[in-house]
Amino acid sequence: MHKTILHLDLDTFYVSVERLINSELRNKPLLVGGVSDRGVVAACSYETRGFGVHSGMPMKMARELCPEAVVIRGNAGTYSKHSDLVTEIIREKVPLFEKSSIDEFYADLSGMDRFFGCYQYASELRKTIIKETGLPISFGLSVNKVVSKVATNEAKPNNQLKIDLGYEKPFLAPLSIRKIPMVGDKTYQILRNLGLRRVKTIQEMPIDLMQRVLGANGTVIWKRANGLDNSPVIPFHERKSISTERTFDRDTIDVVKLRGILIAMAENLAFQLRRGGKLTACIAVKLRYSDFNTYSKQMRIPYTSADHILIPRILELFNNLYNKRLLVRLVGIRFSHLVPGSYQINLFEDTEEALNLYAAMDRIRERYGDKSVLRASGMGAKTIGRMQNPFNGQPPVVLAHRKQ
Image 1 (tube, rainbow, N blue to C red):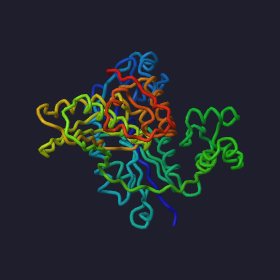
Image 2 (cartoon, rainbow, N blue to C red):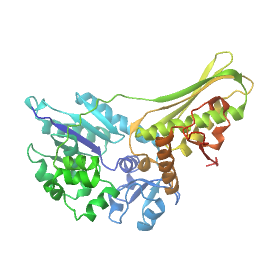
Image 3 (cartoon, rainbow, N blue to C red):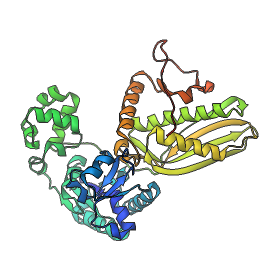
Image 4 (tube, one colour):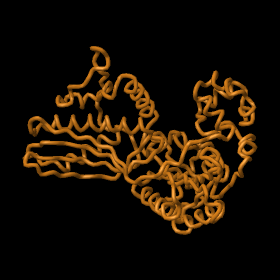
């Protein structure tokens, strides 16, 4: 029996939520993201795209391309709330679904044709979401995740598209190679330099030629161009989190030491998020005093995995929580409300320099170890100083800490 995979995507999600809150924003060009010139566009309305604006570009450039656009900072808690509403509707209606990001879902409807008709069922699900949340949503339906995702993008805005069994290759053939999931700017340029423009050309190429050009990625891209994909729908589990904590050999009131440990912890957990392709929207700090009383505070934030956003928030929670008259026995940090997603385009306040810096730092960590790059403010935490030196005697790279 062949599979039937549904892909659902909330159209320009942040923009749609803002318009739901404020109807005066409808049909106006709208940018959501960092409000300063050094910020990055997290989302943009269809009205701005005709000017060349797209997610992930510098806000300054987006404003220059579309000066009449309304710019909004955005609110993580609001977006998370509306995402949860959609998630609950899908959870009630679909036996197996995957939440791949805050605004994107896959569902396995295999076998449901004998009872309902998968396309009809998907159509009714979409109508229910639109009616109960007021948010526009599109879907694609086919035999696998890749073809369904491409179909959704072709159906947008606020529409739906089914690709019948056996028509995967004809559907993909006339599309631009950029429409293939996994083809980013660099890969696109390589393929364009080879004279490739349409998916059909890749379909007609030998797979070993794609392997020689792009290595293992070439094989994956060739299969996707031919509508082949066996990746399963991964069941969604709510509210995953990552955390770390440290118990001291001796209780302490050394604030500099405590801050340094928290900075190092936050920096390491942020790297774990980026390495796993995750974003967090809720952070928490935990303190246990010498009398074993334990306290914690948490804060909702815009979805992010960036040190320079997370660290100041962690220190803010610590300052609100810390009782200077008591010795501290344990400190801990937790990141929760995790969703898969691209850190670059989900930041509401970021810069090109920061994005490039994190990419370079993470490459060093991937090669030499998690603690091969540290902030200077985290180096003073002697309790975390007993780490293996990945540089064979060479000191780790130290970044001067500056206030954000």
